[in-house]
Amino acid sequence: MFLSIKNLHVNYESLEVLKGVSLDIEKGDINVLLGANGSGKSTMFKAISGILRPAKGEIFFQDTKINKLQAHAIVKKGIAQAPEGKRLFIDMTVEENLEMGAYLRTDKREIEADREDIMDRFPVLRKKLKVISGNLSGGEQQMLVIARSLMSKPQLLLLDEPAQGLSPVLVDEVADIITGINQSGITIILIEHNLRLGLGLAHWVFVLESGVIATKAKGTDMSEVEYAKKIYLGG
Amino acid sequence: MDGTLLFQLFVNGLSIGAIYILLVFGLQLIIRTTGIVNFAHGEMYVFGAYTFWFTYSVLDLHLGFAVILTVIVMAIISGVVYRAVFHYVQARFKADTPLSDKALMSAMASIGLMMVLSRIIVLYFGTDQKGIPSFLPQVFVFSGIRLPAERLSIILIAVLIAGILSFFFFGTKLGKAMRAVSTDSLASKLMGINSDRIFIASFALGSILAGVAGLLIAPVFALDPAMGTEIIFMAMLVMVFGGINSYKGAVYAGITVGLAESFGYYFIGIISHVLLFVMVMVFLIFRPGGFFGEALE
Ligand SMILES: Nc1ncnc2c1ncn2[C@@H]1O[C@H](COP(=O)(O)OP(=O)(O)OP(=O)(O)O)[C@@H](O)[C@H]1O
Ligand SMILES: [Mg+2]
Image (cartoon, rainbow over the protein chains, first blue to last red):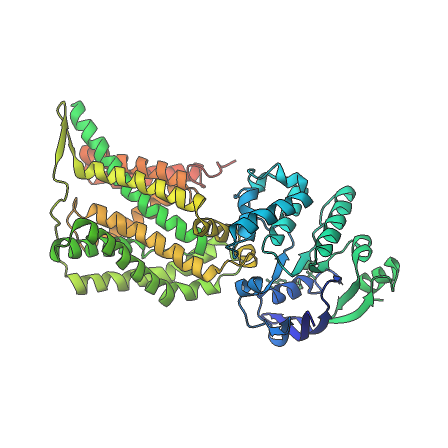
């Protein structure tokens, strides 16, 4: 199994958020993680990335146990995350942000080549390499968060609400970008409240509910309305 | 009033300002990356001065060698201090802990540490003042203006260090990583940056700057174990005056306070410190963010 989570428990002090999440993900798929606000989706990403220590349970990536590793070691193993909320290094330029994305890599020439490829996916950013990232528009910042996460050359990419706050045109663009990234061989887990976007891309859909994965389904198994009812109305 | 004297006071003021600037750069670097407000920073300045005195004056080592040894000793002392004390303080900070809470937590730890370190300095080196023979005893005289080479060298070295720091922060991977951690330590972890290592490196670099400030001042003033406790409060004042987040502000505030001290002390004596404090407080009432911070609406 590519990524395997077994009985994962994560708490914030006394608040139990994840209460035994188990899930398996195969190489090459786009997996969409759904769940109501506050259901613990971002928490799950933080646990996978080693930002939060699980209270119980295990996470395996390509059959190696990673839940005891530090965050930087997990990036080194090939897992990158584009966190929610446009967390850029806002007083650094676009170029420097991308450079930080490639922090663990030393192959200068390959980094340069990869950056060129990534810029082909994000033409708006190519023209702004020298701009301080805090001065980019919201949409451009969102693009940069994704672009930066690709710079570590990940095998598994965790995208936390990459289309948040984007206009419909840009949402479609992000959908195309995600498809393109996936076609280049990167496995994806996507957190997305926009069901049209999420279900449009998903090979598999996981629904997080009451701290566990309540549903695993093919992207086409249920309609948007059925999902919406399940996630947001608890039906 | 004699123009020559004014010019000498000006150069003295600038050299004091340069010392403040180096100290404040260190304080700011440490606050911005680790969130720690280090009141023991003044003791690092003392360690720098005494280590230099010991290597240069007592062991009689070559000047360059004594400087390098001082820097190495500062790196070791600060590494130990960080790992023994601040590592545990830092580990309690969360992504959303406000700076005021961090400041309070780290102030408690660092004031305690300040007392411990200053006792260690007394135990080790005694309370008597120590002098270092000047390594630049020359005095340049331009049309009646006497400029001691030592004072000038402090200013030049501070400018040089500022240049090196700017290259370091904008031109090297480690420097950029320090900037990244200081803006968003969570995001920098997701980039694969080992933030614990960056914390300790920033703390060491900041402390080395304090040590270098001590080294530079050593040949000018007699060394005294209490010099750290005296200067740390002035340095904190300068930092707040310039704005905690602005290196540029630190330069302006350092120069302003250095000049005010030099002229004030000459003309009105020790009371000038009180006036300086009042001046800065009044300024901060209207511009609580410091020189380049936000003006009060
Ligand atoms: N640092 C924290 N400290 C304490 N509680 C937290 C912290 N971060 C998140 N929580 C709580 O944990 C729960 C899950 O949060 P999480 O961010 O994982 O939700 P989410 O599913 O990503 O929600 P959204 O869709 O709104 O982004 C929420 O109740 C939240 O309030
Ligand atoms: Mg979330």
